[in-house]
Amino acid sequence: MNQDTFVISAIVSNEAGTLTRVSGLFSRRGFNISSLSVGETEDPHISRITLTSSGDEKMREQIIKQLNKLHDVKVVELMDTSRTVLRELLLVKVQADAKKRSEIYEAANVFRAKVVDLSPTSLTIEITGESSKLDAFIEYIHPFGITELCRTGLTAMGRGDYILKNQTI
Image (cartoon, rainbow, N blue to C red; front, side):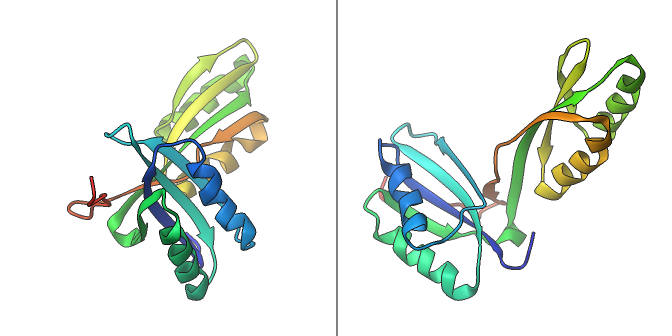
């Protein structure tokens, strides 16, 4: 991960408009969101947002201060990436005639990916891992002909006792 890139996780209310308020905060201040993933937690009233952005220390502090001001936001934390599991999901559709299939299957196996759809002209492959692993896989299969690609964006969770938790629940 780039030195200026950072990961923020937030516990927020699972209500209409929450994501709009969070993303609007970034937009109003001219901050770019590199990736964003949101999902319901074990409590259906609470969602977890993981977003990546880039900037200096001052920008990071400003983003966290502004997020903490939103009433829908319960907890915000700049994740310590040395103590965090970071993963992303990629679905990629590759052109694959009969001659190319075995080489693509072999690459998927090496990268611990799996073929999730097969047609006479293409393979759809699912792979999870750190962003650098997904980037390497894309670079390797690019010459085969990528017809479609979709990434989820980064999701993050602390290792061991490093827990992002809403203390008010």
